[in-house]
Structure formats: C-alpha cells, structure tokens
Image (spheres, rainbow, N blue to C red):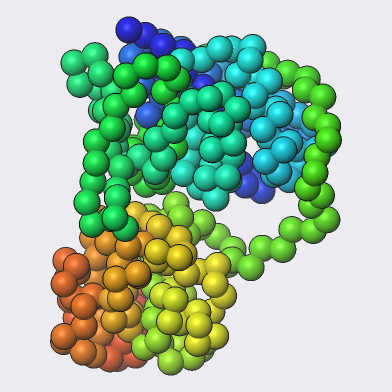
Length: 326
C-alpha cells in the first residue's frame, strides 16, 4: 500500500549532505509508489536545496526558514519538523543517522509516541512488507526489523543505500512554511569546527586512517597527501587521538564515528575491537602494519606487512604516476 513519507534533509555550510539523497532513496522504497516529501530547516533561502531534493527523487519539498534555525538545536528543529508532521500526517519518516539525526529523531519519536529503527544499512520491500537491516553488537551481527503497525520511522547509515541518479528533469513544488519557533532553551553563541576541511568523515567514500604507528602529528602528513589524491579524508584510531597526534573529531570506533566507506586504508593501526566496530563494514579494507600478527589483518581484504613510512611514499608515487598516464 502506498504511503506518504517525509524525508528530513540536512545541510552543512549551505550544501545538502549526501545522506539526504540516500534517505530519499530509502523513502521511495518505503512509500511503495506513494509521495515523498522533503523537509528542510534553516535561516536563509532554502529553495535551491529544495530543488536538489526533488532532482534526487522527492516529489515536493517544504522549507522552514527562521533565524532561530540558523544553527541546529533539538528545540528549534523539533518545533519546525513537528509542525510539518502535524500538517502532512505522513505514514513514514526517514533521516540520516548523523550526529543531528541521532539527536533529533528520538525526540520526535517520543513526541509522536512512535517506534524508531535507527542506523539501518538496508531497506528492502519484500512481499508488501518493508524490512530494515541494522547492525548490532558493535557490528558483529545484523538484525532484520519490520514495523507492523503505526508510523514507519527510521534513520539510515551514510554510504549504504545508493542514492538515485540526479535528474534535473524532475519537477516538484518547493513551498515555504512559517513556524513560530520559540522557547529555545539552548543558545548557540559560537560554532568551532575542529574537523579538517573537505569531505565529511562519516560520508567519505575513501578514508585513510592512522593509528599509534604514525608516531606523531607530522606522521599524518603522508596520510593527508594520499587522501587528497584519492578524493577522500583522514581518520584516526583512539590511540592516535589519545597520543595527541590529531583531534578527537577524527576518531573512528565504538566511541567515535562509525563509517562505511568504499575504501578504508588503515595505517599503523593494530585493530582493537573498539576500532573495528567503527569501520569493519567498509567495502574494501587495506591494512598497512609492521606486525604480521596485528588483528587488523583479520578483517582486511588486502594486507601489506611493512613500515607505513616506506609503503605510503611508494603508493603515493604510483598513484601520481597513474594520474599522469591517465
């Protein structure tokens, strides 16, 4: 049976995050031919980003612009999105499993007295049913879940559900809704981003990660060069962060970010179970380590036993040569 499904979009620095387009793809599966409605919150004009959501599969988009929504707060965004939900009465809601999604969706689910399937890595239509797959036990196992009644509410993990191809020929209405956002209990005075510029770690297709084996902050320089060559970004193990080699915003693992890039290259990372919980579902894993017994090799698709400071320069040079010859 077809459904109306709301997609809560998310932007960063004026650009829609890729997971928004992946959420639209998931919403189209859930809607089963019904209507997919995008929702965008912010303080400036959101029309262009609304059109982008339509190009990627939304049927129409509702924007809520208010000065109180300039930076994210659960109070502000919660009021705005709940107002749209009250107007639209959707049968489903989808959002990315990002830091904002993880904060906002439980609050919405509580207000709506709804269940919530979080961190879904797959959404499949099976005989009229919608089945979600999500990791459990730090990624050691997966469970399948189905909502049998009530609102279908889910967050999806970035880089797992392919977005539809962008189609500028798609037409849809972008309308602005006025919401009186008030009684904000959190005041954002300043936003300081410690993460590196460029590709967001949680959505990167390529991640080059360093562990204690990088030995210093300067040891990350060849990793950054390789990441730039491959159009990716740099991550780290908790050991590297604890040692002061890099900022904790780069931490990958059970107490850091959980990522699923197409390519993950682990440099000088031993492979503690807490780190594996954050990256073991990467599509291709390459490990570089001097210790042939390092646990990281147990999950790696390709392993290189050697000093990363010998291996990386050769790898960088080879990739540069390939680019020249291409």
